[in-house]
Length: 129
Image 1 (cartoon, rainbow, N blue to C red):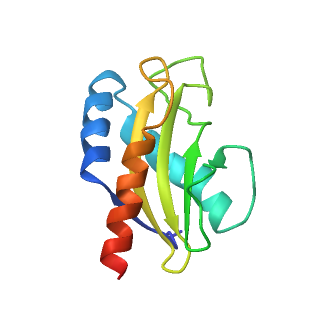
Image 2: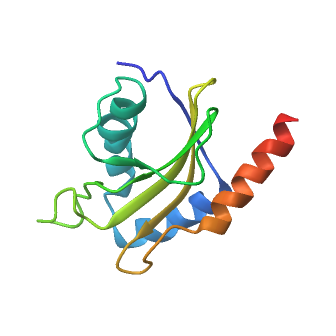
Image 3: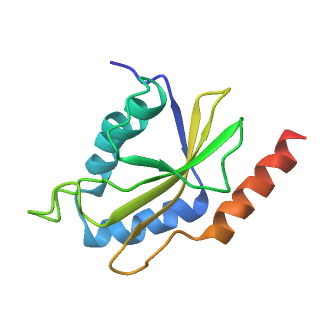
């Protein structure tokens, strides 16, 4: 089945991902699974399995900035979807596009980088106008 969503990554996300990939070797396939089991389920099929949470203060009619809290990581055996890995992304409603903004391990960092999200949204607004 082909995806209805186009996926992109910010340079900061790529840097985060590369760093975490050294520690969690299964991260690439885990992210591919999260695209289907969390993102597409939530945004395309409109099924809320309590994996994805919109981040208050950053959502508009055009863009939803969300956090995946239930992210299964095979490298963290025995933890299932409570791996502690968080993924922050922006869903563009009109174009059906996802931009990954940040990925982090909750054991190393408590919350998302809200300044990074603000910068992403500012840059998007500049490109749109």
